[in-house]
Image (tube, rainbow, N blue to C red; front, side, top):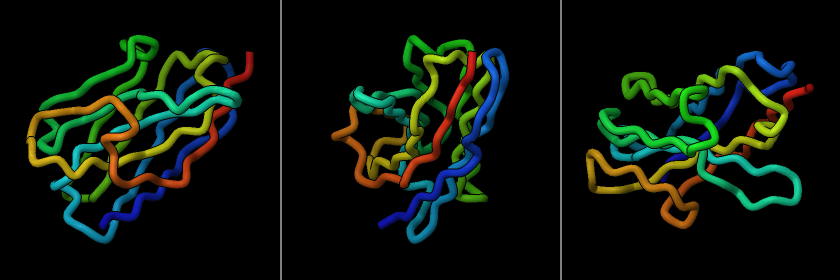
Length: 127
């Protein structure tokens, strides 16, 4: 079992940047593929970005490609989401999630594939 805690959210103007962090504890971090999801008010939770156990494979939602970058540091048990050129439509609660997959390279994009979730961090982008 892994415990996830997100940080780094806040209020930023359109065009600005934020870096989200997710600290993991309680289990062997490198055994999990990791992802960021987000949920805006009145909308379903959606995939934003994911990274494989090895860190060698990444996947992004079309809406964030070229603006967001996911990375992980297995030595520090952490995953990060660097967000740039933020838009008001990026406003949401951002969640970190862990997938206990056997694959070293697979990144899944649906909420049902992830076993553990953090509490979320609010990102608000003003226009």
